[in-house]
Length: 171
Image (tube, rainbow, N blue to C red; front, top):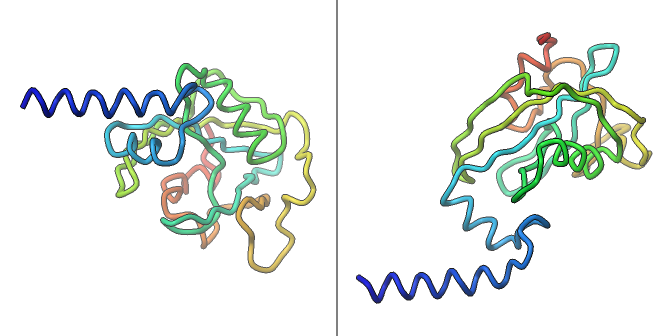
């Protein structure tokens, strides 16, 4: 048993060498490994406009496809505020304003992993900066965005949990 623990320790130490700065994100293989071991905390950005619409993005991955609330996993030693800003920039090519606290907290356990999701109600601080992101019709492509009123029929399965918010729930 002791030899096995020493072998595991050596393997994990060599894996850490391959991840020099986890605050920059993890290599995919390491990320998938960590997903099998511990819950991940993520922020989801419910960007709402003055008409009560929400800015959703199209997602396609090995677990499904559909419109989803933009979000991302908080990285090692990263502030929540920084992750919110990074998600807004990465997924929406925009800046957002948000309150100091999440408006909702959800937990999801799935084949992919265990997630604790903090939902932040946001508004655009500056408009979306990349016009090619907008979905204008036809089959959406991964990463395209659009303003949605209500829960779309093709919501990404994991984000159906936000239907009451998409359907107009106020804080």
